[in-house]
Length: 114
Image 1 (cartoon, rainbow, N blue to C red):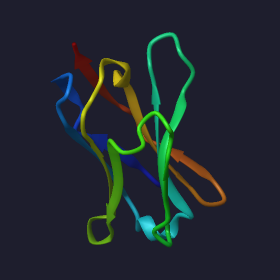
Image 2: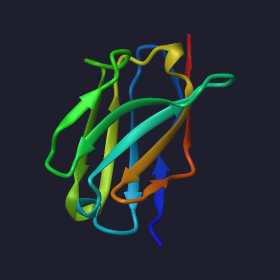
Image 3: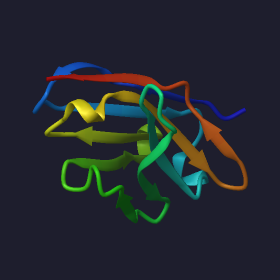
Image 4: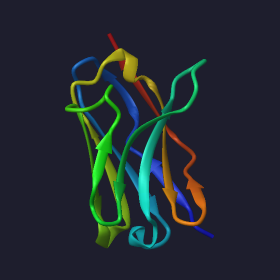
């Protein structure tokens, strides 16, 4: 069974940076791609970024220019580097991998203080 484990969340001041990790229990190249989502209190889960197995990336407008998604194939890990963080970035961040199925991690909390 595929498992995804997120880590790297925490409390940071506005303007600061965090790097989230999503470690998979299998080769990340076995997925069509990996996405990051986030869910703030009282709001719907929203897509943040994705990377495909061919290396294509895309970002939500709200994070473009501040967040970078990348991967380290040898470690079966996808990263989300988050810079210039804002209080609006406060949310639980989830990793999602997809092929013919969808797999989700348990989430990691990111809190940005003003």
